[in-house]
Length: 89
Image (tube, rainbow, N blue to C red; front, side, top):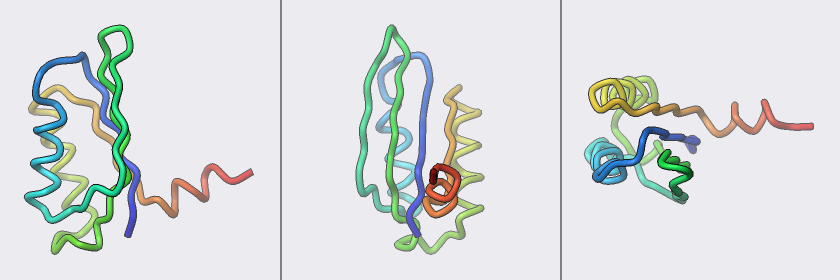
């Protein structure tokens, strides 16, 4: 299952490493990634494949939420099918 992730926070060293290391440890494959820094705000969008993980989607979401809280990152993940359905015209 594919999912869309966003990460935002004040820019600092190690944000990408922290998030991507967590995803890798859970067996989540990153299919596409885009990041930028706008006026000191780090923003990253990822397309990930959670079907490669032995963890359920809710477990992945919970782990990302915990990481976000502990590192002061705004991390959101949503199933791609739901994301696409919400944005159809």
